Image 1 (cartoon, rainbow, N blue to C red):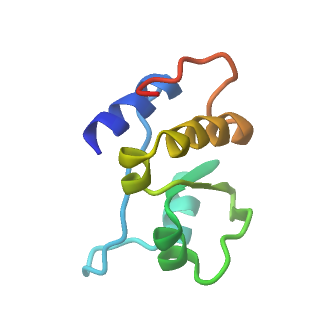
Image 2: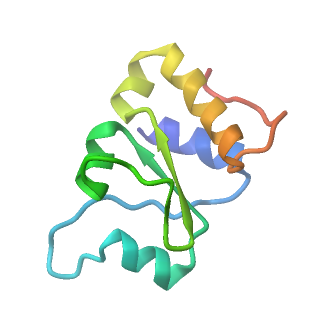
Amino acid sequence: ATLLANDVVRALGIVPVWGWPDAGAGAVELPEAVEEHLFTAVAIFGDGLARQLCGAGLPASLKTAKLVALPSVQDLQQRADARRSLWATLCRSGMLQMGSTQPGG
């Protein structure tokens, strides 16, 4: 997962904010995080995480943020087609500009 995160950071050209579900007392729900920090895009890795965060169907947006469904981290580690899909989806979403390097491919 660390190599993937490094590849994403290099490709985006910025250091994104990373988050994960947490049921602890200090946890912030996704809608609150989006509103508080004015995120414009949220990448969600895997169907399981998408269901956990958004229920049955992933909406196209949440407040100010476009929600972008990506392959799971496990799929990215194991399957070349998932890695190709990751970069293609990041480009289509506008999070990654066309012509950027596709690391780790």
